[in-house]
Image (tube, rainbow over all chains, first blue to last red; front, side, top):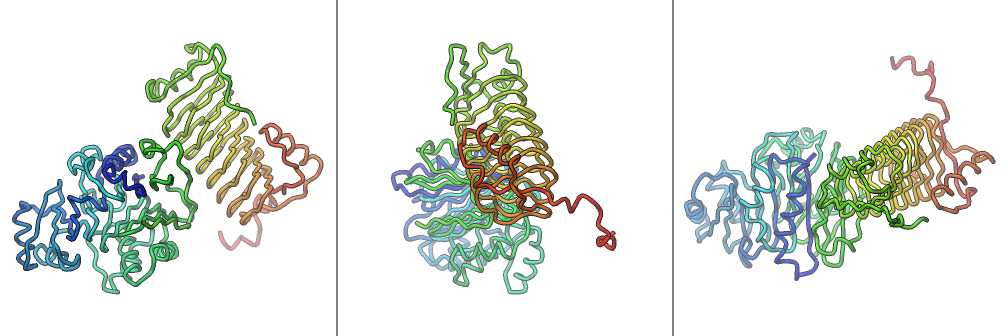
Length: 298
Length: 236
């Protein structure tokens, strides 16, 4: 199974409630899988301060101050670090790629959960209600968020196997389903120089999309290309610095519901995850068609 | 179309958010414990298996959206969902009547043996998959692979049908007013005779629609998959 939730806010007045609303959605999906859960929050003023970029490192095993010093030494300027459960969140007023390189040079064995100028990615092993509390998600703010609660089938239950997969700047991908031909596509991507962090099938999808976006494709075109290349079952929710998109495979057996109002667009594996959203009783609610890319841009 | 079930003196309201799903379904399975036969289930909030497994002539209105398997395995009961349904509404229904005022997700009426399922909105993929005698009337469109391996019963689609319609169909009878994206294996368009026009008019009337049956096309089995074909011998 696995449960997916996502919320793209249009009404700025709701930004302070993003974390609370996303947490409610994620916890409601716990019955679809509760071995691990992750979230990505876009635009939290504390986690992603204006003018600074962030990198999320998983399970570093050192106090945040020591991590900040080690990365700061590589970068040649001061880095601020904060510990959020298993994630060490670093930020500095530099280019995202610079901070990423400094972090991965200082800690080459450590997994990068996500990076960018606007996104914070938090992952962990456990039940979504526990993780939401450990992340402090309910008090997070922002304009967009995605979440995933996992029932592992394709790789181990670890923070690294937890979604979202965030492998490009401010990009996230969450997946319900399983890709059948991911090993073949992984080999092709590796031959093209793409590096992988895990054996997970979803990571192949995320790296495929990241490369397509880096090649200049729009999110919609990247997802159409994914549909043409990947075999298997998937409902995907993909987010970027300004967009939010949903796509399902041709068979469309993995569920998805989209709800839309003037104030927000939301997506979830099941309708019950959406019942707490303000104005849901007046929302336009529909099931996405197979192999149709639904995208919304800020 | 009929309106919401009228509240009578013996109407019972079960607030799912307070009573809980298990107790609500337990009461519906033991109608002798209810003070009436007309029941409104309020605040369903997308819950699964709402009003599943009933076997009594209750008249039930579910006031809102439901999740998976609503009204599954229904016998005798008349159930109206005043909202959308998740996957598998009225799956394996044996008798009775289920109406969905909104849209239904995939596998609506799957494997159902009897009764009437009406979906006023659209139905998703695999509507009527392996249907075994149920009648289904869909007000809007149906998704891909609808009526897959449909064995018996009738499926009426007032809108369009998705790809692979009626794939590997047995003896179910299908009527579509709109466009069929593509027909599945062994499913073909058939002539509409007086018997079929009468049958379709009866189904539309039962569902509360007054379309002209002549606007519909009938589809059914070409019966080419029923017997072994010697051309395929080399495949075995």
